[in-house]
Image 1 (tube, rainbow, N blue to C red):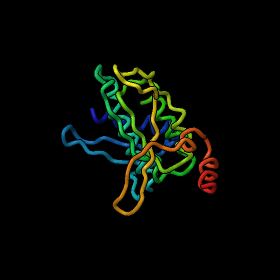
Image 2 (cartoon, rainbow, N blue to C red):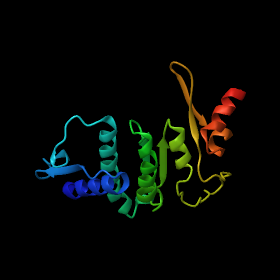
Image 3 (cartoon, rainbow, N blue to C red):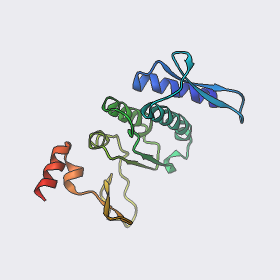
Image 4 (cartoon, rainbow, N blue to C red):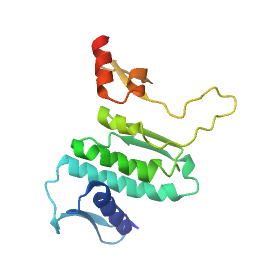
Length: 183
């Protein structure tokens, strides 16, 4: 029910981000339902990129909550691409809180991938609740979680590799920056 989804988006906007003035309103009937965004009761126009990102991500979370309730949700693969893009620093922790409480803490997904360019957000992501690791038969894997980094050697030559220890084992970006200076 898309109208219930809009209500859930509004709950997330209010609870996690303190945006009481922005509301997503469902209009019409399925399958022709449309959404309007209102600010303080009036149609909102000229949303900032950050506001658009917040509403979009809250909508994504509302949609995925249905999938997480499914009995087969432990097979669910979730990929979240830089959810804090275009958000100010005040919203970084709140975005982490939303991901932690709705997706990570219930531990009902098969795999969760989150990409980011922001080292402050990475610091929070390291604190996500993760499911207990269940080793596969005939496997030597011992890690519950892996960190990867995109390695851009030149234009058109990009690879994904395991993140260096200094990036995954230290909390602050100062460790990362010191490593770069040291190198």
